[in-house]
Image (cartoon, rainbow, N blue to C red; front, side):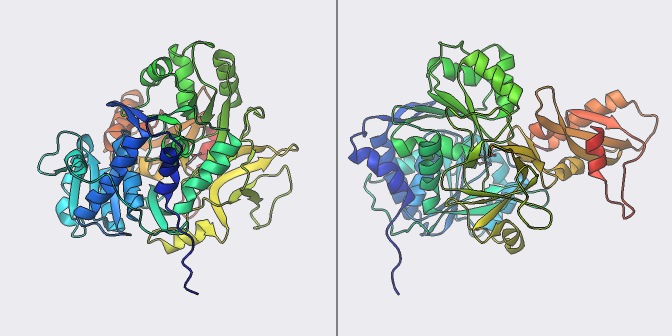
Length: 514
Ligand code: 3SK
């Protein structure tokens, strides 16, 4: 059988209908530089695809995108996909070590990077023979090629290469408890599956929506919210280049009048505390969406009261690409993650590997059409996570008597802080580097909004050291070494850490004590 499967290209699927259905002049993206129409977006996607060919990138080769949220992100991401080239968007806050690993692991042949994000790559550029082109977005390109010059010089015509739904399309790197990030391999059909089943069917997005995601496009959550979903219905995406703070987010809510806002619980809590939110009746929001960490019931009710609209809490994963379990408009149960998104199956597994009875806690597994196929170069980790049609999430849930799913924590030691994974081992390793620290353990502790943040338990080398001064010093010490959100918000000093007879820290005892 030589049947390769029907032609399907994710870029063609997301973009072309907007032109054929007469939305060429409609605004697709609003970013710091202004409004960009669907026609301009489509033309620049084609120009970028041509540019990649010109610099010698071949179909199925990988290119790294380390880009801020501006129009350049969708142009590069979708341009590469149209040419059958594999874009690998990476977290703009990864460390130099992470980038060095990703360049090596992916054998990327090109790096497309925002000018202000180039520095951590500079020392590695010579070390990777596979890396042939560095293309810089922004005006400070230095000795490198300028993205805008390269794109401008190309034709706006480009025919998509022959791909199918099952062709490799893009990768997203995700962090684990130990080791380096894992390249999660997604297929061409996966983006449209999340748009159809979650965004359209579950939440009811529309062509007249203006969508604003605080989560950046390099996260699976942000990629759906700010790119796949708006383009799938011909809506408008607002992109925020800098960090989402109460000030920057509220400016957008006041001035650009989005109809859907996608956030994470930590940000919703900060927005409520800021006093900057528009009043009920003074905003254009139809609803909000929350993911990344469980949304506490109290936070949801305070938001409903102040804003007069719902937050649809859901859970997704990089491996499943977007949300597979969610509350729905008109069916929101505070304190729960809702019910399975149509087209996805959920099961909860007990320690014996069998499904748990209703009401009992089990490890969450998902089966659905947007699942990644593997982690690149990581056979053992792939086998653990991708079990035939089922994908393991690493979360524990139970299902109540009415079928709603209630979050109970992680199956591993990972913490989700502001929607982003934090490995306690990484924070411990940073703490241990301080000359006054003998041993360190990091666990999750709930703050006053019931949102988990890291707490460190420290054994100091000197018993008589001033704990207050050392605690402040250690917080600063971690902030200087890791992404700032990973620093321990609380530090407790103890004489010794609870350990097993083999010397392993008994984290559950520390968790109980916090
Ligand atoms: O963290 C989540 O819940 C999430 C949601 C959508 C896509 C990706 C992720 C990790």
